[in-house]
Length: 479
Image 1: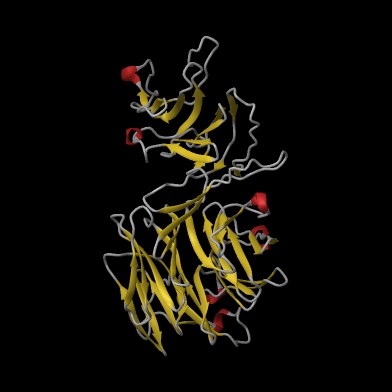
Image 2: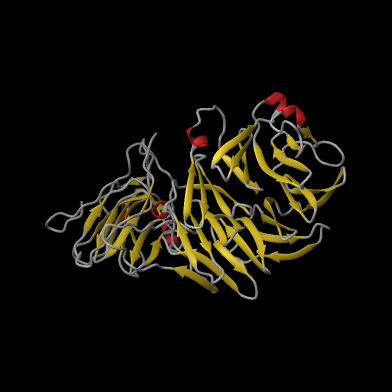
């Protein structure tokens, strides 16, 4: 199935006072959550010049943070940076990026460039305001999993850990330099992480941790790679990641971390109650992102001697940590739901202003306020169980009405259609399965189903009240 994915882009002349209906397929959006901390929300209220677009993306779903010439944070949709003065710059297709949906980022200190890998394996290389695109992997017809899991950069080369093997990129020529298929018998193998200690390259693969001398004559020859898992204290099986910190190699095997000691390996850290999501190396320490099955989450700062130096844990900010770094005494955490947070003497959250999720439903504009339905259905008109409700954009600020701030909507999913009441300007929203909802200012929403309206349940789906279209006629009747 093919579909268009776009950011929400629009110009609103101030004289527009009537209600207009806008249809789009997919809108990438998000909203900053304000808590009892110092929150940096960047509204960017300035209306762009005529003929220019402004993006409204979801910057809350942070998946990776790293230190380059600035602090860079990748989200599931886009990218932003924070400079030394804590000013934010947003990057998107509007500012020159060539794709959407980021999978991983990496920083090369030699060329001072940021490598951006997208979900479709397209690559961008960002250097200040210059962007170079490398689309070879995306265009390649090679069979196999081309998804780029992580990026390791060194001496002007980017080593891409992909689902089929290692892909080496020359960051000066902006071209693919080599591909290493290092699976058993030279086949494809998923690479989860990659690093070097200056003497060996290490690849965390689905077949175990493999290494090769950096001076090997043929790095792409699988026979020159040694699988070191299952011996000398290192557990056999899939290696989820490998990093280099404080002169030591650390390998992740499920929820256990093993550290090299010459040719042997010792268990560095494990905690049966705290599953590991990811590990990163920063300033010769390990930052371990963890989350329990019960939803508790934290980031621990681990020394290479196994001692825990610090634990970062704060409800609402750390709920699904994906990546963390240390920079000049500050701890930066990228969280899937909490955005990017800096921990120090104070706690500061960085989430550029935008809507709280992706809207696939209808949009309407009324009295210079944009309303967008967040829900959607499949091509076969089946539920997607979307709980994001409806979003609104007024005076440069995004807000939402959904299950997450209105628990009464717990059974009302997939809002796909909207209408504005011509009498009182309240919002009517149709749920595909949950009935009809009327939102009127700050009053509690009213949900209409069979018991309080003429709505009937769907044939063959008792209990489901599917509202897929709304309109008012000239007599102010809602159809």
